[in-house]
Image (cartoon, rainbow, N blue to C red; front, side, top):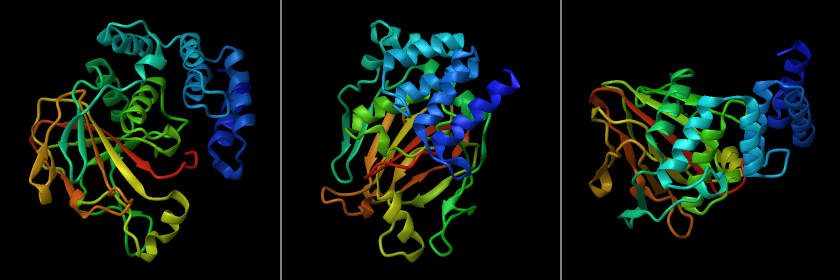
Amino acid sequence: MSEAQADRLERGLDLLTGRNGAYDPEEGAALVRAAAEAGDANACARMAVLAATGSGVAHDWADALDWLHRSGDAEQLAVLQAEADARGEPLDLAKLAAARAPEVKSERPRILAWPGFATRETCAWIRRRGGERLKRAMVNDSVRGGFQQDRMRTNSVAGFGLADTDLVMTLVRARIASAVGLPLSQFEAPNVLHYEPGQQFAPHVDFVAIGVPAFARELAILGQRVVTALLYLNEGYEGGETAFPLVSLRHKGAEGDLMVFHNVDDRGRPDQSTVHAGTPPTSGEKWVLSQWIRDRPQPPV
């Protein structure tokens, strides 16, 4: 990548995400496109994500796949081809983004499961991407606001904003959107979670508590966190279930399985029965893709 192309790509991503105080998604996408059309592979891969998410450009799965081909990313293309092969279909991202019917695990709280939601190749890809970016996980601080480390959560996490994600992860998130019937615009940035033996996320809720002063601004701007989706990325570990102690449910998905639970009831009120925990593996490592979904469109990150 030439210095000029690198600068163009960086300025484009700044404008797409609002970094450095400026936000102009159309101008940002134009700068990324210019770098891509100049032959920069990284910019082509970014354009694939922009086309898949409709960020600064029209949403178009065919364009997204074309940009990925132009990036020359053979490994990512092979992962997408494996998704098509698993369904016995051509490599058509629009069709691959459609989810099938779920299994109902619980009516209250509403907990659904999709066995075989993603392929082993997709799970391995996401694990590898996450492993490159892991850091200590944090929790929402109900007293001071913001995020803090806390002994209740000892696992590691890797976040993926618009500038960091890829087409494989975008396809998975689009399929989750199809599964839950909510638009991708309401999705927070996804997180890859990693648990070593003994690491946990103690019992907690994912909805944002109402009436807590430290959370008032978050609720006003970002809205309520209404759905949580967990894609299980591996097997070969003992323990590590997702536990719902108030309803005596413990769930451990196989590699590629998806679980979704609704954090609010039918009237949009926080559902206290959704208290859950990421229990610690007793041996082996646990990998999960976590996706929180709000009740309104989210700002770019």
